[in-house]
Length: 417
Ligand SMILES: [Zn+2]
Image (cartoon, rainbow, N blue to C red; front, side, top):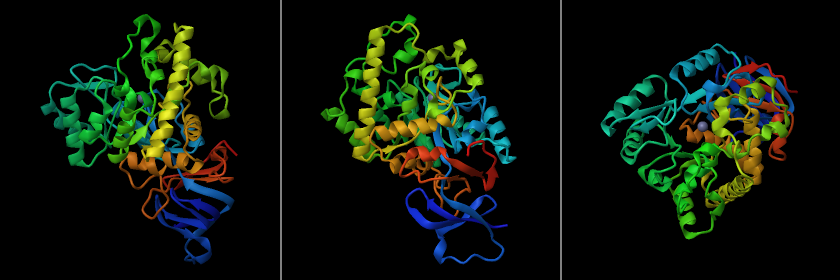
């Protein structure tokens, strides 16, 4: 039966329509428009939005679902789709099956396994021996359900080129978490996205400072040296111009740089961290994102680097670079769903307007995924949307005043008011 929500203001990803309506049948949106000029067939079931706001379901572009113990938290916070960055195909399939059954999990887009060269740099990564192996590997991942691909820290230039070329031929997006190949080189090769603030900017460092392994260097490395960068040098401007010209989506994952154990002190998205997550994040597994062993000086410099990252986001945005919203959930303190609201606030304080921040988690995120059917409310789009009590364009915190969430055309019971 076709259904329509009326008595709402609709924000479709680009424009505000008031009074608006959204009409859908099954899991597809059939029509979106002005409610005062439409006449619905008698077969349409009308639902009142009680003067609220209807917006596309939110998308988190950087999630590791195999480490997420509470999938339903995403929906509680209005996140109806996530992009997974390298989990196992088995886990992806489980989430998709549950989603298909109507269980409270978001839809998962998958970038396949992280791609390295030579040897894997992380337990979730796969390594290619030679570029000629790339098409076979990507084809294998595509058949397992990959929607795109992700280059990882140890991939060399030849591998990067082979991955980007093959994905382009397939019409699939490629993004990268890279710390050695300059991002400008990846952009010239035709990459479609760059993850993390430090991965876009590392080529601006004159030298990578050496870090003592004993001091939890993994996490220190994402900050070290960046405190000295400025977005106003000629080299920085050229990099940002290139990011604009090549149309990449940069997902700076500002949440990732909030220094742990900040979640002990602060409440992500102003909610208390569930006990299960406190316990989870206390495990030694998470030590690679820890400030243990840091000196006062390390901490001071990291805070300076965080400031620099935000300055670069601001400048990149002014250059017209597309900024995507991703969180690196569930790094310590980066709580599923809640973290996306925190990321939007950080993007907001880094120069994106409320509406632009919202675009980074909707229409721009859809573009990062090369999916035109999510992150927007338009005919043909998947029926994923949120009914909010108040206008999110006036105040981003209204994004948390969720009355109801629809996933794949069906309402999800939510705990929030
Ligand atoms: Zn990640």
